[in-house]
Length: 317
Ligand code: AMP
Ligand code: MG
Image (tube, rainbow, N blue to C red; front, side, top):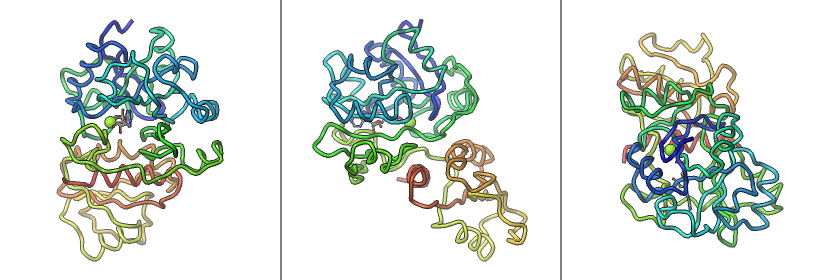
């Protein structure tokens, strides 16, 4: 099973491109299939906290968080064990670990009985896949084999929490908000850990590129739904531009008919927006519109993860 090959698998966040994490040649296949730079380390997926001990040295905080949130969308950065190849960690002395909850991914973990590295199953820097079809579309003819597990539940990647320092730091906002981490640890994680870096910078600041998830068409963001709608009415963007409001606009909004409206949810719930975000971005982008326009949501809970992905998709540098 998986002997050194790559396989796209559903997780509860997005689809991942999985390979044996302790097999350097298998890991190399992930980097080359994704054209991912070597300074962007991979997350290692394990069945549970006990099997995490094969790849990292968990602390008290890690055990408490794993108990509360695993299996689930929380990745912990911890001191690594020597068996983890440098290619997985980009030469860092820490490794990012999580236990996914998707039954298909868990079944594969169970069968291979070894940790799996699995970044999102798409070419580097592009919009992450939330369906098996997205994986096939984004790699084209030479796509890796994919196990179809339906549309993913959360739609945005895991929360990444660095536990290797004195204070826990959120490196990437995701489905588990800082308030939930605080509830378990009794201390508020620092949110300032995310230092943005540019492509080509060395591994000290891994992966957290300010531009990611990029659409081909330019994406313009407004601070709120009402500001997006007002702009679309008063100063309409070029015909064929795609408008991505968080919820379906009221008919009374009288939007110009030459705009295409693709709501990110039917109810305005942040959960639903997160779940649909990448699929709707892909759908809009596939029409090669002159512009895509959307807006930020309330910066609380899962809203922080949605805004983080939107902001990074909108960056051009
Ligand atoms: P993904 O692309 O969803 O697989 O997430 C991988 C991201 O996890 C990387 O881009 C890094 O930002 C982060 N990451 C992985 N390993 C480490 C690590 N050892 N230290 C800090 N961040 C890490
Ligand atoms: Mg990714």
